[in-house]
Length: 133
Image (spheres, rainbow, N blue to C red):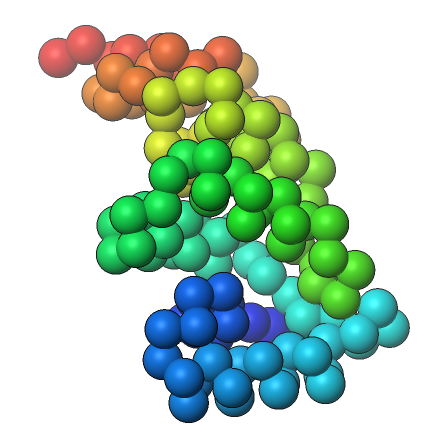
């Protein structure tokens, strides 16, 4: 298995830098197989969502489709896949950022009863609590 960094995924998905796109495409499509998948970690997913929404003005629906497709691609392994699926569901059904949704789900998976925050959008998620100042 080989780990994939955010910038490789961004180039592959956006095709905005032709030379890097070709390199990313060639690598992913020739190296990442069902038997030897590329690995995408939770931090990479958070960075990917941040880049797509911040630099490329992707909508929440577009981002959700990208993350869902990554989860479905057999040549890729998303670490903590079930946790990411739950975070994606939270993301699509709330005003919270993807990273906050993933933090909450990872904390739940770790046994936390709640996650405290000053972020009003995140505080609206299940098992989150607004730590009012």
